[in-house]
Image (cartoon, rainbow, N blue to C red; front, side, top):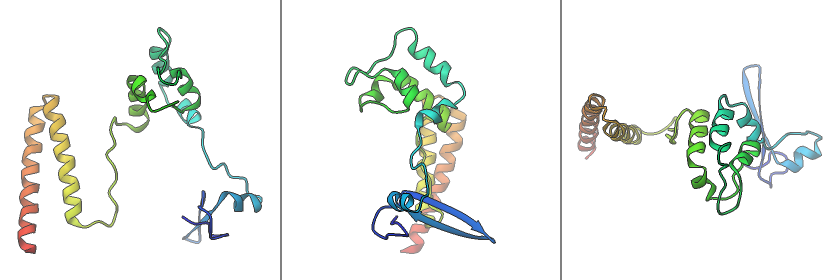
Amino acid sequence: MICNICGTKEATVHLTEISNGQMVEVHICESCAEEKGTEFKTYFNFGDLLANVPGLEDILESSGKKTPLVCKSCGMAYEEFGKNGRLGCADCYDAFRKPLAAVIKQVQRSGYHVGKKPLKITKGVRNVHDLRQLQERLRKSVETEAFEEAACLRDEIKQMEDKVTKKGKKEK
């Protein structure tokens, strides 16, 4: 998104105002925001965000007090992540896998990324996306030996595949 004022730089400040039922969006780069005398905080401290997560201290204590977790590549301790919200290197993800998984699950309510669907997508694309999600749920149900749920998902997948196949034949 380009700055609405200078028209050249990337906008980092995004304002939305609703006035008389109309939504107006303004996108400004950092230098234009400073020139206008507007002080916006263009970043947030992930550590501050994590500090408000309930139960995070318990996770940090259980993972770090007995034998502190330290990344072998960069030497960063897991406790530092709890303070500043940033990891030191790519290897930190492996070194802190278990406590990070617990934090991510608590913050996002899930341990894996599901993604979002755009509002204006074709039915065919939506059906393929939904089918993939059902197949993933089926795989997990089988892994956890929830066979009744797996059978229901299998049937639902079969119906959706038949529906997609019929539409494909009609279009030809």
